[in-house]
Each structure stands twice: as C-alpha cells, then as structure tokens.
Image 1 (tube, rainbow, N blue to C red):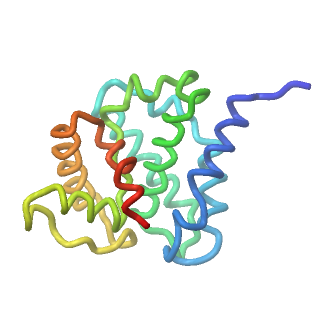
Image 2: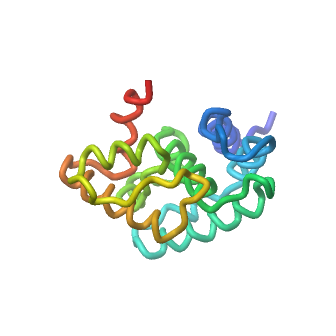
Length: 176
C-alpha cells in the first residue's frame, strides 16, 4: 500500500477547517464542498514564506483562486479570505503539516486573523471605541477593510505577545 500521508492529513484538515458552521449564511449549497476540494489540493509550500510581502502575494493569489471555485451565488472576497485563513491556520497547527512545510516558523507572524463577526467583535472590545469601522458582514469584506482589521489585529496581538492568527483561539469560547 502506497499512501501519501501528507496529502491525507491535508485533506483531513480541509474537512475539519471548513464545516457547515464556517460557511453558515454565506450564500447557499456547494460552498463547503468547493472549499474543501480546493484546500485538499492547495500547495502549502506557497505559504511557507518568511518575507511578509511574498506571503501576502501568495495569500492574495490563493484568495482569488478560491473565489473562482466557489458557487457564484456565494462567491465573495471576504468569504474566500476567511476560509483560506482558517485553513492555513489549522494546517499550521497540525503537527504533520507544520513539520512538512514549516508554516508557523516561516510564516506564523504574517498569518492573518480569520475575520468574521465574532473576531471583529473581539477586536472592537480590545480597542478604543471608534477605532474600527462597523462590521459589514463577511460577504461585504473587501481588501481595504480587511487590511484595516488585520492591522488592528496585529496591534492587539502585539500587546498580548502572540501572533494575530492566534487571537481567535481565546476568543473562540466567547462564541457560546
């Protein structure tokens, strides 16, 4: 039996990272299956970048690639970016995939906080009132607004001594 265990682990992470709740209220059927299929075949070496500009360029290209694979009724830049950031984060937390690609060591400080209403609320709680514009919903997030929220996440994470991608970990329990 010849198994590609790295590929099998990546497919498993894709299934776990993109569940029904991850894409809830984002436009209809087919989103989860399309994202899982895309992530199962995504070359994670693209994101093992020490250079912030190169990491961001790969993230932008992959966001556009995923956007083209989502069902048209659900295709939004904000959703594609959120799903991609969740998958990359979960892949970097996975011991086999992180060992294979060195994601946390190489790119951990560049990884983005997956944005949704709950992480937006977490950022707003951590910042001065009025520091961020209102949250328009994932479907309406565009690159300029995302960058603004990511900059705020970097500030909050720096104060806490963690990576911005990790802010979602302590905030996840607030979801209940």
